[in-house]
Image 1: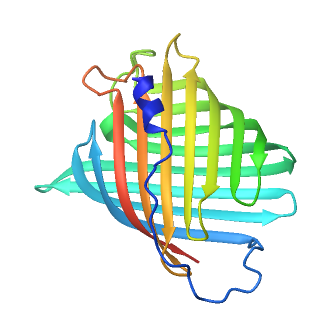
Image 2: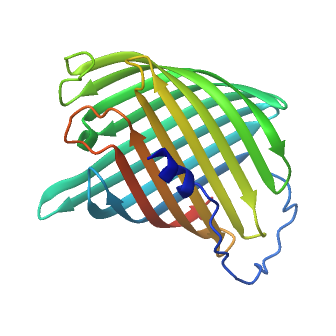
Length: 252
């Protein structure tokens, strides 16, 4: 299964051809202190929730000297024949301080997906990372962070035999970003998560986004997300969930 995820993480070879934006931008290479984007689109999912539905994404970043604040909130909701067929909410707040090439941070994370038996999942903890490569066109970073996790489930956990869980989660995260042209960029994130519940109890998360700017504020975004859990909460829950999305992004 991990071999499949490795193949998935290959950088897409398709490049969109388009004319460069003709609008004038003063100080175009200077980064803004605040960045906010909102994406809305159609998504097709396979796995524990097979449906066609709506996907909403929001990302916020604030920069001040060596300090950073990152916040993202994503949601999926769908119905079929009057019944709910998909529901997922995920959000993460990261407070970061840089000592280049190193950075330290603290995360607060929330997750909800009743189709995977997670009514509520709250995670928080510190982390340490390093930029392995950084330029105007590309960035590559590696980070380790430790979460304390509280889960409220809609089914008894095979680890605690109750509908509540508390444990520690070790995370190893790789992030990659590259700008092919002025208007075309690729972002990828791969996270390996090892829990303290049991040996060989782990998760793998992969996300890839190809963003093609159409105007100064509008862009076409193509996302692929794969989530793998080695030991699901219930026996009838599939180990691998995938999500392919096409969204329109608006940047403020």
